[in-house]
Amino acid sequence: MAWAEFILAFLIFFASHSIPVRPPVKPWIVLRVGAKAFAILYSALSLAVLWWLIVAAGRAPYVELWPWAPWQSHVTLAVMLPVCLILAVSIARPNPFSFGGSANEAFDPNRPGIVRWTRHPLLMALALWATAHFVSNGDLAHVLLFGSFAAFALVGGRMVNRRRQREMGEQWQRLSMLVQRGNIIPRPSYISTFAIRIALGVGLFFALIAIHPFVIGVDPLS
Image (cartoon, one colour):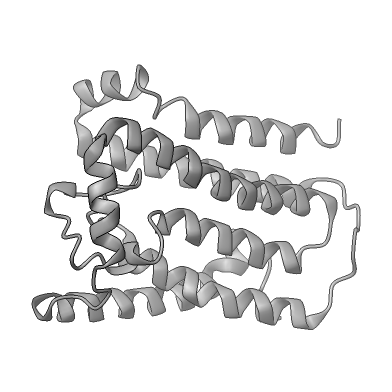
């Protein structure tokens, strides 16, 4: 079956992102390997399966839904810079509202940073990434791929909200009200770190352009 690899990669991708983080499974793994090792292993697994899924979409039968035009690549490149910046200022930062927060006890609702705009910056980055690539890939396999990612990011945010609200109770509402009045500008003591993160985000953008032809097989500048 020509679509077999793509379907299998899709199923394993969603299984690998849902099963390890479920309440009965995650505590069992964390107890044995530790929270930091779990985060590293889960991230590595996620990236590996994502790469396979994207490659499988490229190997799936080509069924054109709309023709490619040069302006579509410009849209993708323009959106990818904000995606990289969002990732740079969000990863390994305290965020008690989301699933990817680090050292959440240090979260300052008066200086929430990007959490002032969105409680789930990583899911926002995923939605933007998927939408940007949706535009420049008009074949059936990639439309299914990136359309599913965009929908997953939007629905996932609501699911995480409900889960975290149950877990945090009244603290969730209290922090939400404080965040809405918080200052997005970081504290002076964090300015240098913020600048480094922005520089890393720009570097990530150009690094992705450089490795894209070798990892994905498509040159985004061609």
